Image 1 (tube, rainbow, N blue to C red):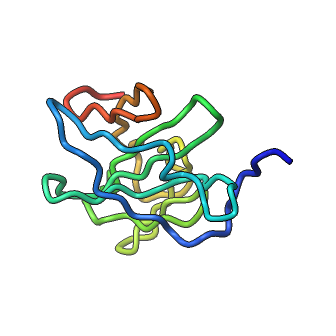
Image 2 (cartoon, rainbow, N blue to C red):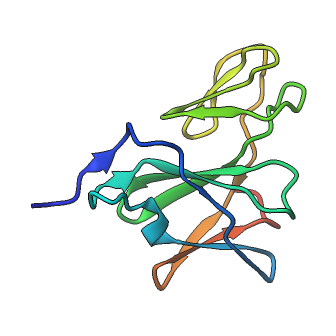
Length: 127
């Protein structure tokens, strides 16, 4: 039986490992106990002012979004494929695009590279 995409599991938080100009996280962090895949995980680390949400869109595609609202800088809340600002109600999709204002700009995206079952989130470059 194949692995299924899991969307109703609790949010998984990871800290990752800081190296050079970014954070490494394990691709296995997306697996649930039932061997299905989470659609996203949230990276919280003391070097980050705001968390990063990493979405798994398919086996080899991930995107990392900074959870800072582009309107006035509040920390966003994650709910499946939607990111919501608790301050003024702005909403973003899993690609960081605005779906509801007052925010007018997309979220900051970080490049993600897969290296030996690890994801490297490059914190120095913009996606």
